[in-house]
Image 1: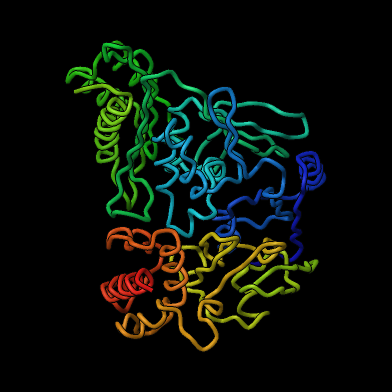
Image 2 (image 1 turned 180 degrees about the vertical axis):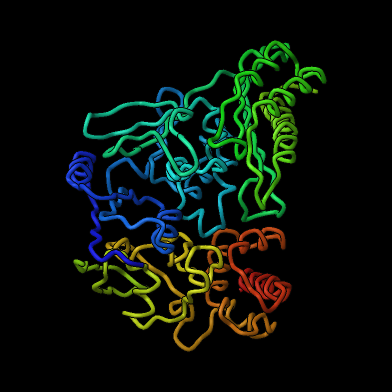
Length: 292
Length: 158
């Protein structure tokens, strides 16, 4: 590590954190779980002048019921999230996606907020949050703002937060009865890998098992995780019959603009994203109480 | 670079150290406190050789800053045995020859102990998934799984 002049700050209030960050002219890195930041420091990919550990700001390590949903502090680890029966019951797809990140050791520290702010198109926690219509609470020199999760990724390693801003929590909203969500990714191993392609589906059914609301998001098939309204539209008003599933699959593949790399080809990613979305939709349908 | 003074608890004892802002907890443990049980394999959180407990969570010490240990409780392999009496997992790894070069072993024992405290009767699959972040390039893992399961059995009947 370099860090010749690096400073470490551990603010205990949001206001203090905003001030410390605003006063720093150089590169700042927010430290919560640190599972990406520490790797970047080690590799020399980032040489921040200031590291701000936000874990001691009140509420940032808390999961709090709010308006029928849950507010997840930006420093809540995957392990803590996975142990929360309430969040698991309401948004099982979001929790299962966060739990796929890294090893047991990484789960002890890694956060959904960090996964989002790291800006990877393959971030496992992000498609589920976008499908869930989750939002982020962001603080900065201009005050507090709420932002839909899909408006945060800007490209590989890039996010839309302005200089001086940081994310304090993610809000998972309430959902109607007969709702379900699910996340699936393709990796060539069983564990400890990065998504080659991924898909998240959240949907709500009526008493007859007809889809009345849906959101579909894809990961690792574009420069950012991508919300796919055409895929949601393909299953609205259906009972996920074969024609609807075929339309969903096609809409997802159409929405892909992936890269070729060592983990997967354009052709493979484009096909697999559609298949994963179809399978995730069926799991979400079953979780919503739909019978096939 | 401004040094940071840190007060923490390591293996039940109060400890203090001075570290650089960008110094990892692993480097602090090994280079400043002489606790060399945790190893640096990869330094990027992939291999698990530096596994320690931080506030009762299993973590990679290479992914934690030394400064983050302020006010925390840290548990390392050095705190696993009770004096001269080995922990059942340590004895089991010897009995089953579940190590060869031994670099990964401290991390695996710390990780397996965390598993058995949470789940005293895991399936082989649960052990394998829990230890997926602990790489061993010698044994092929089978002996490790047997050693953990045998220790778990002994701990349940103790």
